[in-house]
Length: 286
Ligand code: DGL
Image (cartoon, rainbow, N blue to C red; front, side):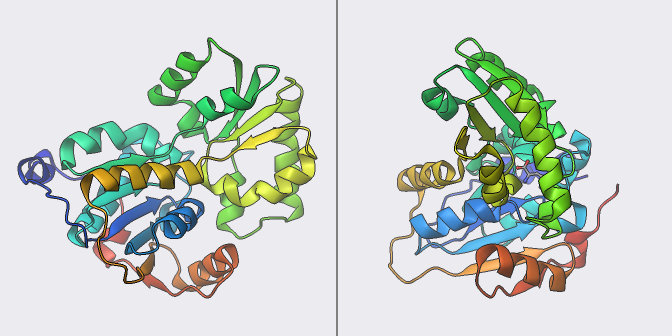
């Protein structure tokens, strides 16, 4: 883990946001691509750097200090590339480290969290289900969020171990994935939920199979677009790129390059070239 005196140089250094610098985006793996798609659509002139920590995915079943260690290593890499802002496109990492990193690094961080607030605007019977990782659901940040909104609705939390792994393996509509989804969704259905929040960025890629199971009977809430809009608002205040040259998107993984290229190309429905992070940023102490 980065020592305090190492990370504190970011506290002292003023990170004057520079409009032409890239936006850094990361996730435990490919889930954050669901957010990246919306960012690229909304901010086509921005240069984006996406890091999939697939070599260490999933985060959802790991302890907070591991998630912090990995998030820190990736953040340091993005800062070294000149990132003007970092989007933590991972609910699990946001829940464990965003406040600390905002304080330590002194640049803006945008995070993702389960969209309970938008779900409240949609629910008719005030029964909301949240599908998320064990790490997200057991975090203090999530507990605070669900308590804050829990006065206006019944919120049912469903941990979904194994789901992010299925997406990482590219098994979006494999029988095992459908079986897992049926199990988790039926547990929420038994609580009469009329709205389900997708509280993990990997689950956005399972939207279709989930729709197949709920069959229009339940609304799904996915905040990927809202995250891109929030990013736009922050950049308007701080550092929106001024020229209209189309932005570039660079993809990195800490896992296998070949697997990442096949997986990302399949998820984004176009040919994706993936780069490796330097070794120093790949290895970690488990
Ligand atoms: N995509 C991540 C999230 O939004 C984490 C999935 C995982 O690595 O367990 O929570």
